[in-house]
Length: 314
Image (cartoon, rainbow, N blue to C red; front, side):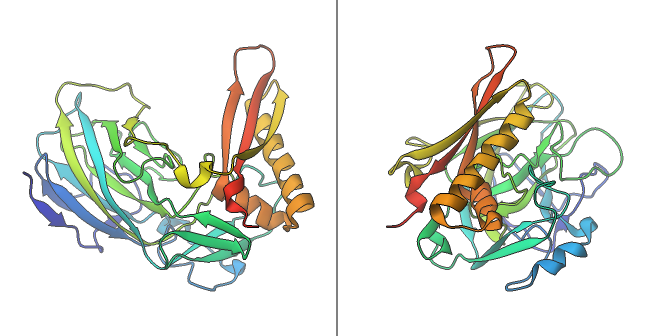
């Protein structure tokens, strides 16, 4: 059995950089217990106004726990990260940040919603709209073999800001190794998010999480790729029980199709559920899954947006 380590929550960084000193060195099989702040490093605070988005210090975004140096990891290996525990703390937020998100041109003004996460099960957008809490780290990755500092917002060939909502407790993530020790980091924790994270934020929150690390020597993965295994059972049982409402868009541009599918979902939420356009967009980011319906019938492709009807309470 491996050892257990507690990583001091002050051991964070905000950029990928292979010249960083490791925050901790561990052996394969070891467990590391981590805690990170929400994605703005405390610039967004409980109850604050959306004006904060007009003055964000982007250099403080993405406080990542690490880097974690796994002894024996070398280029050409793959790193296995097993997710053992994800514990949201009491509060989170979702916001519309000017210039960011799938529909940035449609929503140019800042907007924010705050969420109570204290019961650990669901959180309310409105009294009759409850979103299941399904926590995960939005950013999990290894340091790349290119010198200098690299922003966290776009994913890298080492994974990073992959925003994969099914990397929950019981899942295992596999990443390629580029530098000695792999130099793994994680953070950008979310209490909930739909596939696509369309407004560029999930429910951003501080979180405690525990990870076990293992190595697969000589098992190389293609650069710019990652793999994962989910635990047995349905991917999202809290969402599936009432079925889904979906909006679909067709055309020659997958990105434009995705935008139009979300625009139609926002229109439906405003007309049928009485939400403001801003809250409808927020709900799309938290509980709508974007899926490619078909990508083989040239020259037009299909994208669908699936909303779990279980979020609505009668």
